[in-house]
Every structure is written in structure tokens, then in C-alpha cells.
Length: 511
Image (tube, rainbow, N blue to C red; front, side, top):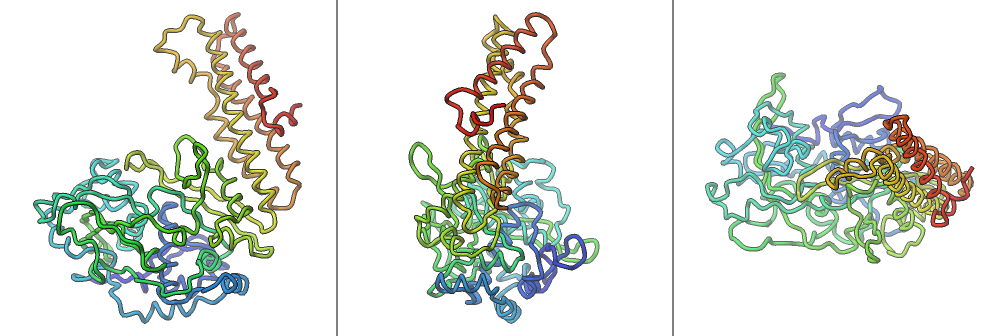
């Protein structure tokens, strides 16, 4: 069976001035028509990011990339054609067949002989279904043999290679003739941090914006496990690590050792019905040159890489993105280059996989406007907006504590947490605050005065917080005790929002 993503419709895309809705294009078509395609769309944010990573790897492998910052600027502003990459890709003689028996695309052929005995259902390939690779979200999927179309399997495999989490795989290593460490998965390159892309008006613009200048050989294109010396899995002990030999290598690293069994779908098209997923190449700590998009945030007074967090909305960290552009302290990176652009608006798209001890929970992603020359205003607005939202959330917690104190004057210790949650409108506030925050940033990006945009936002946050608390207090009985709890809680919220400790723009928005 043969399936080649270069020539098969496999990338969901939105074309410009074409048919409404998504259409599928091949890799060659995506690159040849990159400036007629608005964007590519995976089934999840992570899949979209993995497709962009793969396409960027093709540009480097084809040796079609800027070598200096000045050349990058010219590429972006004059929209350097990407047709040479499409031509190179169409004529490349590497192994591109997803089902090649000796060098399958993106896979480890040494696993193929074990597929019939130890393979499981296709869901193990899909991060959102596979969970931690040992315990699936939906148990029947583990051995459920419903086949997956080849293009979906290919995109899922790219996502695994890029964002896979570190746990133990369901591989009986000893029975398969591998040492026990073969079952230990390492977190893939982007599995533990936020990846940021600059998004342009078209796919071509996006690829050019994110194509970091490189003045040397692009390195190895990773098409199949057997194409170069890799981690052999022939001995026990610690994982072998390596640093990529160039950007083509970086963007196509095989972070998982995968095997797929082909099958014909009911419509006759190729698909897969069994998979094996094991550990892949393990990267050493990457130098700054390979972390062009990395965002640093302060944690305990130390700068650390921005990672997905369950306790903090991603938009609350957007000021760190704008700070990276405004301060330009890292030298050669994505944000320093964006600051070089003249009047070209783009979006900063942040995406990551939220996980708990290797167990994927959900994708997190958000978009933030960027206009050269307005990064200082965007940074100020985002800093103020984040601080105001955090303060309002804390005020709602205090108001909830006051309501509990008067509604339950003699609570049982075991009931306190549940009682506090009853009156805490913080979840409702966070759900609505994000929309107002993005509206504030859009106003600043459009040229509105920063102070006015922040003021409108603060007024909205006051209203949202007040309504969120009142909605929680509606469950109180209209009796003396209930009315007292309501009045005291509302007064506490008002006092907190107007206190001397409140952020200045919040105090200034007082009615």
C-alpha cells in the first residue's frame, strides 16, 4: 500500500477567494499556493502547530530560507515566493510512503514485525484519545479496531512527535526483544512549554515570519527512523540525548518511535487499524538559537519558560509576549525580528498542551494582536489588564468568605470549602474577563489611546465581578440572615475593588 503526503490531499486549509470552508491540499499544493491559502487547520491547536512545524522543516531542508536578519526582513516584506520549495519537494527522492515496509515515513521499521501481536487500536496514536498511553480516556478505544484514514493518522503522528508527553508506553519491551527502558517515553520538544507563532495574512506570510535566519547547513530532514543513526534501544541505562544539527532537523525531530499497520478503508482509501507508540529521539537542552519563540516569565523572581498552567489563563501572560518585543534583550529571536517590521500587523498565537504528570488534559491556545510600534502600549495594557483581573478574582474570593461567615456562623470544618465555593463567583468572572481583555488589546492595536482602552476594560471587570457575586448570592434565602450575608458580601467586594491596594486603573474606574 502507498500513501504519500506530498501528493495526497492531507492538509486541511482555508483558501483565499475559493470555496467557503476547509478544503484538503497536498504538501506540494500547500507550498506552491501558500499565498492563496489563508491558513492550515488541524483538528486541534496542537495538530495545527505540528503541521506548521513540518512545513517549516521542508523550507529549511530545501535550503530556501533567509541567512540574515536583513534578508529575513526582505523575505517578509516582499513576500519571497515559496515555489522553489514545492518544486524541491515534488522531486525529492527520499522515502515518503507512510507504509513503506523498510523505511516508513516518520516511523521505526523495527517495530513493524510486532504490530500483529502487540499493536493496539488507532486511538493510541491520537493524543486526545490515548491519555498517558497506558490508561486511555475512553477505554474501549484501546483495542477498538475502527480504522483511521491515512491523512488523519499522519497528522496525529506529527502531533505525537511534537507534543507527546513523558510516561510509560504500553509496549511489552522484553517480549519484543527490547530492553525495559524502551517503554519509557520522554516529553517531546514542545510537550512542556508554550509555542508561539507569528501569524500573517496567508500561510506563506506565516511561514516567512517564523523562518529564523540561518547561515549554515540546514541539517538532517527526518523522514524515517532508519535514514540516519538514531537512538538504538539496544542497551539499558540512561536515554541518549542529542542536539539537532540544524533547523531542518529541529522541526522534524522524531519524538516518538511509531509503527502503523495499513488497511483499506470502506471507500478503498488507505488507513491504519493498529499502532505501536514507543519512545523516540531524546533532545538535550536546546541552545537559545533553537528556542527563537520562547517566552520567559518571572516565577519566584526568576525567569522561567512559559508553560501551560491549569491555574492561570493564558491571556494573563500575554504581557510577557509584548515585553519580549519591547525589550529586545534576547538579540536574535522571533520578537526582535518582529520589531523590525514596518506597519505590518500580525497575530501572536500561543499554543501548548496542558498535562498533569504526563496525562494530557486539554490544549490551551490564544491569539494576541501585534502592530510594530505599538508594542509598548500593548504591553502596558496587557500588564494592567492582567493585574486588574487577578485583583478582582481575589476580591471575589474575599467576598465569598464574607458571605460564608454570615450565612454559616457555625460551620463544620469539613464543609467550609464547599460553602466557600457556593458563593465564589471567580469562575464566572474569568469566563467573561477574557473577552473584555481581548477587546482592550484590539482597541490598542487599532490605535485607540491606551488609557481609554484600559479604563473601559476596568469598568467592564467591575460590572462582571459584581454580577458574578450577585448570581452566587441569589441562592440565599430572603431572610434576616440571608439578607445580611448578601449585604455584607456585596459591601466587601465594593470595598476591595476601591481599596488603596487595588491597581490604579481599577480605582480610577470607580463610578
